[in-house]
Image 1 (cartoon, rainbow, N blue to C red):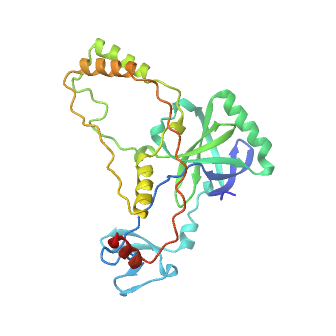
Image 2 (cartoon, rainbow, N blue to C red; image 1 turned 90 degrees about the horizontal axis):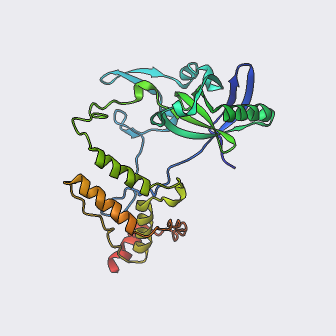
Length: 288
């Protein structure tokens, strides 16, 4: 059973709904360890105090804010616990907004919101009211020593919560959104619209995959068998000189190419064989 990351109450008006949050997604990646090049031993990262010149235990660690170089304001866990805001246990809905008014740029992490038994009816009431009205809820949530602004929206017959960045955390880039005199011609726009239409399709996330992770898995399996893996080919790209000509060729190529069937996801890589000592493994490779 999945482990919840937060437990508390979601409130709107005088209605209180006991809920739990579960992580809705996680990044899948293959982790590579750092090894010593000479003996292939794994490099360790000890918690080391340079003043005491020794490795320290976790219970010896406290937190501090560096206000000047090497000068710290110190905090105990008990002191930090006193700062917990009301949103540590209760998410109060501050306002409802139209879902399409929330810019996805502000989204951070996603969580599934599920009700406790005592709150199922109130949860369903809120869910259906939000579905029919097209609204999302804005609230605050304290979790992992940070108070988040969150948006809660109906999705797939449940409520999904997204932590969001605050406005002062969104970076501005002076070059972003500037035309700088680059005004396309009407004929170029027309061809671009045709190309977009030819590439249009219903969004299906299952047809996309992490090509790098797939290639890394293949390389791991090949190396375990003493084989080599060929490098993936990369297209040779050049700056577009004639925009109209590039658009026409793109359209012609799209119309001539047969419709491709989405590639099925490969089965997960089989479990690795039982690890052997680093020195023995290194010798085995050099012998091959």
